[in-house]
Length: 399
Image (cartoon, rainbow, N blue to C red; front, side, top):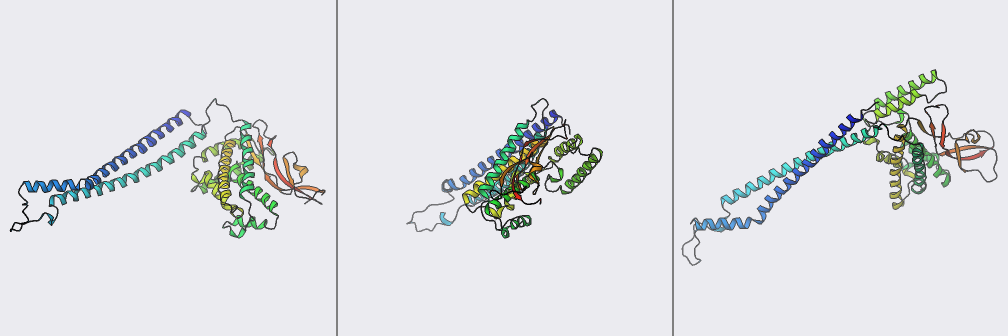
């Protein structure tokens, strides 16, 4: 999709001026003015009441409407000053009370309008940020492979840190309220602690790859309310893959596929809402791996903060990979693969067999996948930028 940069910039300035300046600033000034006015009335009603009463009594005495008699006078006064405040004073206080009530209601309504305006402003800022991300100004420096590679390295290191410090408890699968989580932890409950942690490491990478690194539209959440549209786009994408595959066998990353993904993701990013932000994914991951979360409160706090950062960086990497002219993929290696068949794309991180064991070495888990680039000019010759990290073991026969 081609965006006219000047029109988009004008739309951004228009949103910032109309919403940020007019709504937020104007309503804030109005609300402050109303608070000052109410405070003035309240102070007048409390601090000046004695002064008003004294002045009123003085006027009544001066005008002869109240006669102050000597205590020795045989005549009883017809009226006593203690009989109650004058009617005019009562009326004035009643008017003040009514005015305060009116202003309070007006202030409440103004604050509600201000809250609504701020909500609209936040939505506009989100949309403006989405528009900015879609713009790649002409003549700017292209995204370098090293930038994507460095971000990938940071995510891989952070994943290992989260697993080794946050998920250290022997998991109690029955405590999870998520079906997939219970199945996963039940499947590893009989493993030694070290292998359990490696299994969690592998599963966490799988979740990140499926939710945040995928370049397939069917794996990219469009936000609440767009599930049907996402399903239709996924079906269309699969049909396109089949058509291109039939016409160009073996050329999975043809230019047509890359152009489809680039255009589609630019459109779908406009539909994404807060259900696609880092906090959403961090909460989902925390729920999935809760059975293995440490009981140490300080370690919990640090670990959850790292998990939030991990999701932020992963979303950033996913968006960055989709904006490049060439294709980038975070790939995985299937469990049980013979090491000799994938040794050019994997790095053996550890082996579970006893020292001196022999046989056929196979992968047990893909602890963290690798990164490869598919050039636009050479789509059939991907370049591995980072190898996948795997755990292996020896078997006596091919499994």
